[in-house]
Image (tube, rainbow, N blue to C red):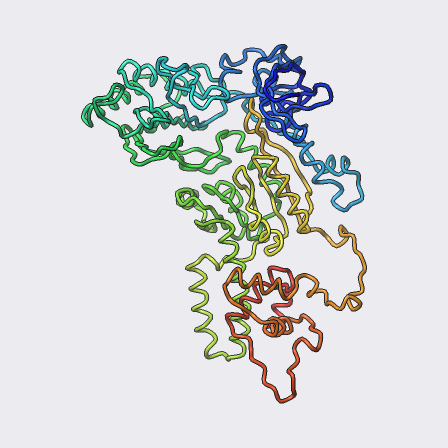
Length: 617
């Protein structure tokens, strides 16, 4: 195959999420949006290292799988759905096969001696379907634009493969009809008023997006019109604030006159002058009602505002979170970390039985919402921390090392000075969020790109919770992270998928992991005396310890200081490491700040455990 040339071939299979695999004369091309069994015409857009990528031009022959009745009229034009022409049961089979191909090699035998396929089949529990196959989404972000250059005002979703063209989606099948009623009324109103859309390249124009959210359990609706702040005499703009107010009031009244199954909780106007094509608020004005509503999941209430993170499939989310709760198992008396906690949905579902649940989330607004939701649900054992997971865990790890050193020093000083120093340390830990207890269970629900490698290292090699549950919305990211976690001594015990996105190529995967038991480990005997190295020393060299301390604290520590700290915590040193040059020589004692930094490094390299630290105290 040659770049730029056209070819016709049959799609043999589909790799996650929508990559059709076509084979022609012994060569393979990846054609996005091709379905298994379709005969497609494509143009080769890229060829590198014998691998070709093709741009789909047309479907020459439908797939034998495309037998779904009453398919969405926008399918194939709109860029939203991939599998809608295939019956739902077949969609699930395709997604299951994709996940199997990705994760089976990672699970492998996990050191058990079982065949790769057998091991995966033992723990994989298949795909759980969405309770609703259509009309399942509770949120949509529609864009203003035109279907063809210079055409009439359009409001809908982007055309497949296009950054500019917008398709009117008045019959979208993945949302409740209330959504499309609001969409059509909004487009017709502003078209009649002669108001134009915001042009992304020129950064000029008024209408940008329409955001609609609808609670599945209550039918409450939030509608938010997102515009620029531009006014003036140019065509398509409101001339001034007074006219803009009249225009927005007319739009509000038009929506309130609609005969909908649900009811409006609020109608909002959001100004956004950012050049980026994202929905964000420079100013939000309530035109009607309030700026939020409440949704219910598994008996708990959650406040939803325009920008709240909340699963877009409410009924599917109940299946997902029930699965996660089942995989977590018994939480009675346990401390749970919910990392990447969002608005605290999972944390609050585990809180009624757990001793304490601590959520960590980088988005401040989501953390505030989580705290409000927990208070509303009467949960007093939930704590939510605003911060980057990697940085919060790093501070937690350092604090654990400082606590150990502080306790040892207090014991030396005596009971009079000890309590005051301890109180200061506790206050400091509370201020920084470093006073979190050690977790028994960790829940991981990261963004699509997965977990930062450094955060994953802290989770797998330093915290080492007894159990973990990983919820992934992108299997390719899960593959990378799961390989690391298995390398840190965890084993996958249960795994399943939950289809939160019928008609599309996406799927959620849930994995339960636990620390390996001694019987699961293949032991290899080595005579460490012959290697002239102790078991703990084998984990890191003095140079590696110095480099870690320098990188994380900026302190320079000597080999002598490292040797003193290692000896203090029960790591046997060869005699010449810690011996003065003469019997009368006085050795400098390792300062407290450097001792804490070295302890942090030893914990990082798993050279000291909690038992060693207790013994040293």
